[in-house]
Image (cartoon, rainbow, N blue to C red; front, top):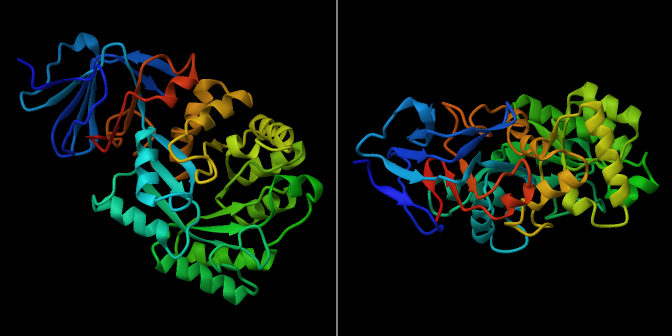
Length: 375
């Protein structure tokens, strides 16, 4: 007889140890790179990693000590990545982290917190004290006095202050640096050439990041700020910038990533301009990554961004790639974002076909992170 069958007709609290053997049996799984749903015989997981994929015709049977999830009629996706959250804002961090993970987002980039709170939350999750996604934290928001990101006293007025702030963020456990170059969308439309953090201050932060081999992400919604960040070697823009077609091509040529945040940025009067720019960036071939700015968007509602991406013109598959393999490329990681041997055993299981209706991802049946079923 097969090992213990965990029949998940309705999700419930089930404990699966990360070091045990887990088998996801039946259903279909999304091959993100091929862009198709494939019949699933079995996905074999050990020690938090995908060990093998078995075809339905293989005749393979689970080992006697395995925990088996029977998934007939369900769709298995890789755990999703949110490229822009603030888990320590807008509520209790532990609750925010748990809500995000239960929404199917197993990895997040936390783009700004006060006093190293993002790094401390990451460490609490790794230690098992808090339930949450894999967190890649920035430090503070490095901006100028009176600027858009004047949070927690993280402002700088000289290159030496910029270097000091960047070093302090890294010493506090940041895995990347966050700079704030421009205001919000309305200002980007009215003053496209306005920049809050000048080239010298940006260069000082980039130099610290480069020496530590840590990337720099930029809040740069205005055209001039976006181009300045790209020219300086920033890794990603934290929001969709408002640009013209020529600027979109420059961003593509620079190799910078754009993190979307459409669900929040398009909520105001600037929404049409944000969507127009997003389409220009897509047409130019700029790599796009899903991000929500959660903390502005309610924690745990991250999948709303998938809907916003499709409303802006992406197909459901393109939106899912923005939350999986594109995000993995941004993170220089081959271990998340797809269902393949060697990848992290992160899964989001849904009822329905997400390639036909992206909204099914707003109600996951259950989530697995690193081989552990999320309660």
